[in-house]
Length: 133
Image 1 (cartoon, helix red, strand yellow):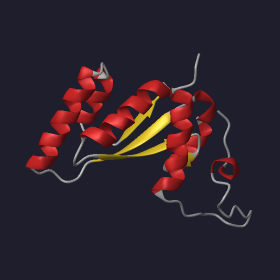
Image 2 (image 1 turned 180 degrees about the vertical axis):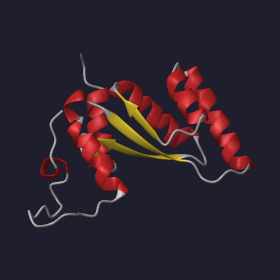
Image 3 (image 1 turned 120 degrees about the horizontal axis):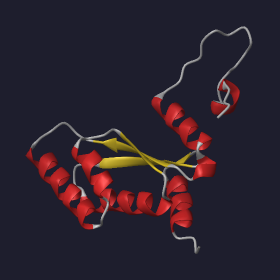
Image 4 (image 1 turned 120 degrees about the vertical axis):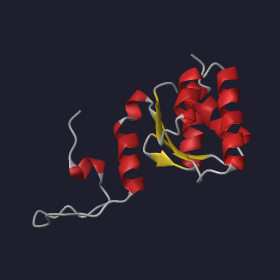
């Protein structure tokens, strides 16, 4: 993949006399998501609050639900508290995102898809996950 600062971060000032630019976490994840858009890669940024009994119970319950749906790799990564999950299959990404959203009291996730975040990313992923083959 050939990428430049201008293509990855078009909203930033890329003056030729500038030697540095500031980025934040969301800029980087959105650029990754946009760069992988043609491959339909979904990125989940996982949010694990500091541990307490409720968090551990919620994490264990989510892991069990994911195993029950056959999402064993996802369950294993979440059990290890991976911070980013990259999905190559929109159907599995959608299912995992819905389980995290609906079955976990303490764990959250931000979805990035096709260079989008939030509701726009959800709509795009939903459309690709439910597209008739």
